[in-house]
Image 1 (cartoon, one colour):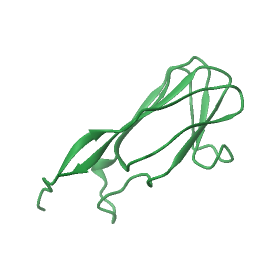
Image 2: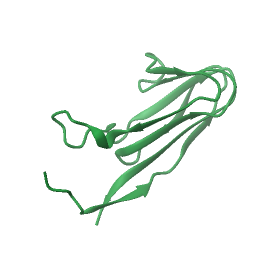
Image 3: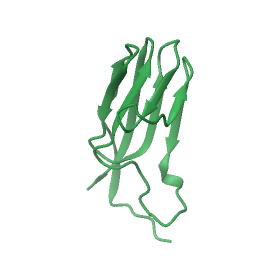
Length: 107
């Protein structure tokens, strides 16, 4: 398999929000991430969703961070990633939740 050297890594704008006890928009992806980090910077659990808080994707305990490396996909899609424009929502009693990501920039 040939290696695609036509792209370089670029840092996306950090998405961050303070939890209030209700569903709070954390932010919207402006690029398709290759690596994405979800970071609960508070001490209270935060439930994350991509549909406005209706369905929880994952609940992050206080202080937990998760890194998803989407480069290792072996499925049918060569560029498996979250869709451009995905909006993340968090529901937690307090604290700050951050989402950071790296995307591929064509050169």
